[in-house]
Length: 549
Image (cartoon, rainbow, N blue to C red; front, side, top):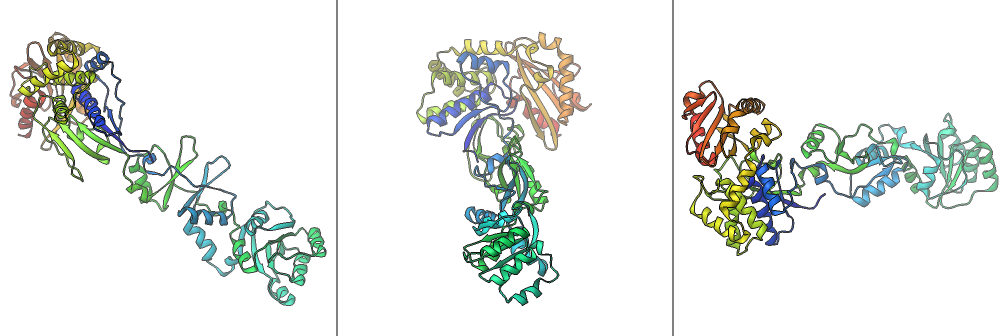
């Protein structure tokens, strides 16, 4: 089981505010003593964010593809296994010593050959289905010797595992003869004490194994006869009753294993493990590492183990925008500046949501409230995220606190906000630089729901519309493919000219969309949005009303 890690992470398709706020807030929590907090990202960086991190000489946060709990997260690191050739007595000892109910049975390469379940073993030893089964011993002379801690004056084919029958010679010679009449002596294990007549008769008829109990000696005459007849002779320090019990435990565990066991990999999701255990008959599953060797055992109780991964969400509060698997792990905090979505938790959490121009502004206020000045590079992060989300303080979402915070961060970082903002938008405005038109559409794409109507809106900033209009047909085809793939009723791309402080909207939806969208149409699927800079504050609220209707 891995140690706990708390990731501060923004939304999928992260923009600069999402990445910068995650990094800056993780640093604040570290400075406040939270040692296990780490920044992360839920998608690839856009060109603007790459510029910011390069400018500040800061490392790219690790990528979280998903945070679904994995099998490796919930099993214990210590695994107890048993070789296939080991006797049941060793299995019983391990069951008791480690307080477990199942043992992976392995070959010489530590690869599983089956699963030994305590219930099945005890049924074999204590609850025979037929009366004659209580005599049955699946064992080799060598394993019987090991269980009885015996000496072996004579051994004959000691490694051969056979189906044997256990008898106790605690009677007169004549009675003994009657008891074994018609039985195959080569399948017999005979336990007796110092009854030489019983010992002699046993070796003369050629029993498979003669066990002399109580640590008593065996005469040379009987040993010689045993040698001639191929009889294995063992002498054990245990009494006859104890020896009878231990002999039944000499069966190699490999003879009782369940070969059709459930196997899962360390990297499999706990959800998949849950399905296998709940729909199967096994009490547990054998966990395998990348080489197919046993790495652990997973039981139904492991399904209740908490994931070591915990999250602090920044710049979003809707699970549809969060890293996949966020609904399966504990969310400790949310720091955001967006509308409230369908977010809920099982426990009370710290939830900070302020109507400011950027999440970086919110994080900066938390630094100030804590009496902590961010380091120059972290102040640069916060300034970059603030300037990006407020379009260099020109967006309608910009408030006086955003402007005052930008001045404060500029002093701490050594950057002039206006000049720094111009540089970061220039770095991120080249539409043709995206690997594909699909990547452009998805670079800052968010999904929403107007009642039962799902829709998505992406946004890109440019310094002129010329390049976008040249690529418009290609971008429209990519937007249509994303709409179909995500099964959205409508999909749009807001293209914002930060110099002219206006936008164009490329929107695809039903045939009624041009008549209800409420913006002037300036081309096929293209609408003019004068003065609209903010997707969050200006466009999405309007679309929610339109699409609900």
